Every structure is written in structure tokens, then in C-alpha cells.
Image 1: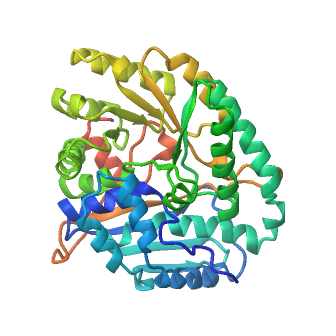
Image 2: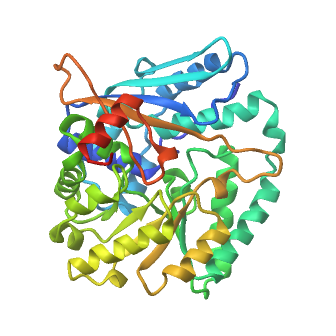
Image 3: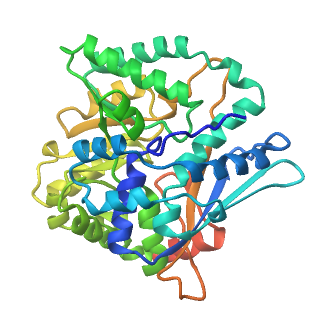
Length: 401
């Protein structure tokens, strides 16, 4: 079977920005990740063997000078030393274990230095998604010409609806070609409707941003707070990450993902200095309108006008929900929208995979004889991750019971 990932930067920017911050602040931290299929899907026979082969082929990927030049130009906040790290970076299949049980459920785990394994998640999820459709014969449903036309209409509607939006669909895309068609359509629509109130901001995928001369979009994921929460406790995880992030990026990349352990503990950590430094917050779980009300209230309590702050909504959005939310949030904040699966895996007859890879344990250095388990406690209980015992322990520590 053909190699699915063939470009080093066919990945989301937030993995690279987090990797840089991890090296800068937690260079010896070791972690474990686990794959979760929320639908408990049965995968075809032989799937794990082919996935192992695809992961082994990642070892051939090397970042090119063209990719580095593009990132230097479009991502000036990334320090120069990080590109020397990327030039020497090589994937290693030994970081990954893959298996299928007798029923056909898929098991995938990563373990190793955080700064190495952090660059696996998005690529492996994209491989799993595309490989599943190939091995089940559903790839014939992926009509990229029709997908381009649908994506163009989505882009037109969002632009005319006044939305500032970006593609964030690498992880669960139907295929590389599907994301290519979607991003190309969004760019073409943005050029055709240049006078519209909305803006196509860019894509999280660095390779497609380079291919179509767009801005790569991204900051951080929940794993950053999860790892710090596991090592140092959830009570101050947000504060410690804000401190580390500001040390690396000096005020750039200032959209903070706040919901790892829920609004209440984040709000207690979100002091006036950080509220002024970070340009905004990302809403990734809970009811969007309720979360926006909490954000507005918090900013006002710090004598900050919420209308001057960006709020990025990224919680399972589609075109219509984004337009409705734009109408609701406009004039209350600076709203923008990160849209994923709806852009890159929206095909008649094809069901997107509900899959994630979560960081589940961390230890401060390789010399520690044990890991500290961690979890995520988002505003949606259905999005909790981690063992029941760890979830219960973290909830108790945060007085959520």
C-alpha cells in the first residue's frame, strides 16, 4: 500500500509550537499517550500490521529547506534554534506500540521523551482515518471534485456571514486529497469574495499553508496542561503553562486553551497580567453561549473590555452553527472559528471516525521510577479522558464533587 504521510509538515502547527515550548521548559519530561476510539470500532483484519508499516515509513521523513524557509517567514515567533532541532529530527517506530485484540479493536500507544513523541499524534490519527477507509473499501466514496464544490459553498457562506474561520481538520480527515480540496476551495472562495465581511484566516496544516501561501494557524492542545497537571497537580496547571508559554513566545501565540480542567479552576488562575498578555481564549467544550458569558464576566472583573479580546470557537462546529454563533458573539468579543471534520471529512455515505490520542501519564525526568497519571476534565463530561480512578482523584483535588 502507498505511503499515506509523505511530507514532514503534513501536520498541525500546534504540535510544532508545543514541541518548541516543551524543549524550552520541560526538556527531560517523559510521557505516555493512548489511542481512543469513542465508538469502540472494530477495525479490519490486518489493520494493525499495516498501521505499523505506515508508522515505520515515517522514519523516512525529513524536513526540507523549503518547509523551513516557509515556517521562518510565516511563523516569526518560533525561535531559530528550533529549526536546527527539526532538521535533525527523525521519527522512530520504537516509540509506538500497535495491536488489535481478537475482536478487532485497535490499540495504539506512544511512550518516550515528550519532545519526540509530541510530533506523532496528528500524523498517526490522519493515517488511521485514511487507512480505515482504504481497508474497508470506502475510499471510493471520497469524491474530491464534489468535495471541492461543497467546500467552496461552505467558504462562501462563512465569508458572507462575516465569520473569520480556519481549517483545523488534519486529524480526522477522510484523506490527504480531501483536505487539499477543502483548503484550495476555501482559498479560492476567499479570493472570489474578497469584499465580504468574513475572512479565511488559514489552515492548521503547515504543508497546505505552504502549498497555498496561507497563514498556518495554531497554538496549543490539552496535552500541555494534562502533562503539567499530572506532574505538578491540576490546581496550578493552567498558571504553570501560561508562565512557560509566555517565557517561550514573549506574548506571541496568545490564544489560551482553557478547558482542560474546567472553567472554575482556570478562572482562578487567570490573573490580570495573563488576561492582558494573552489576546484571547479558545472554547473547545461546553455550551458556546454559556462559555462566552463566563469569559465576558471574567474579563470585566479584571477591568478588561471583552470586546477587545478574541474568542476562538472550535467545539464541533459546522457552517450553520458558526454563522449563528457569529451573529450572537459579534459585538461581545472578537469571534473566530476553527472548523475541523466538517471541512475535511464531509462526504455522502461516509461516517467520520470519532478518534483521539490523549496524553495519559507523565514524569518529570527519565530518572524517575514511576509515571504520574493524568486526565482531561473538559466542560463536556463525554470528553473526559483518563482512567476512572484518575478522573475521580483530579475532581476531588479541584473540589468538583
